[in-house]
Length: 165
Image 1: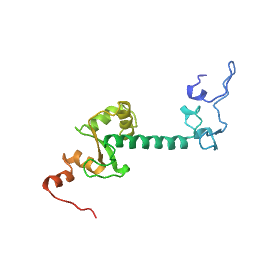
Image 2: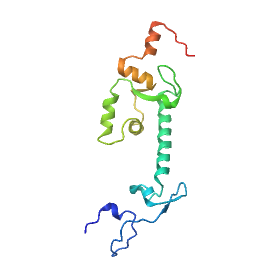
Image 3: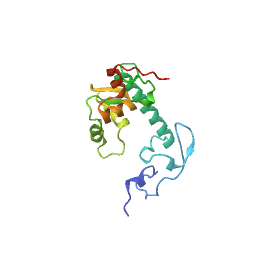
Image 4: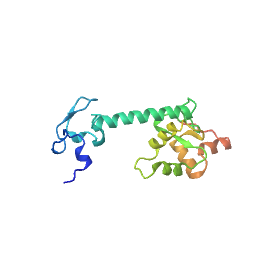
């Protein structure tokens, strides 16, 4: 009988004992303190003893912190869109000044499901915030990607003043 590696993870087996099957007893999450069934924990992270819910929550917090730190760096502390001045963090993204963001994301993807923002932000952090990027809101970023220019820049070039009410 062949035993897969996944069946052994979490089993309490002493040397010389026969395999007794996968571990099914409940575990306590070290973060929230709740006792949950083993299936509520990630298979590859049973040693950390954090449940999937707590692991996902802390991952979201870490991603949000990294995004805000990178936005602050690339906006020179203004935390605003370089084109229109939008300041809400949820609307802001980091733009490739010279274009080629889609190609770059595909290179970072490398056949993995995670791509786009969080993988890109990790890459920026690991490469020590290289030059060639700026902060834009999603609207300005999309407009530049589609049309080559943003309507805000066109309005400024023509001397138009738009008042938002």
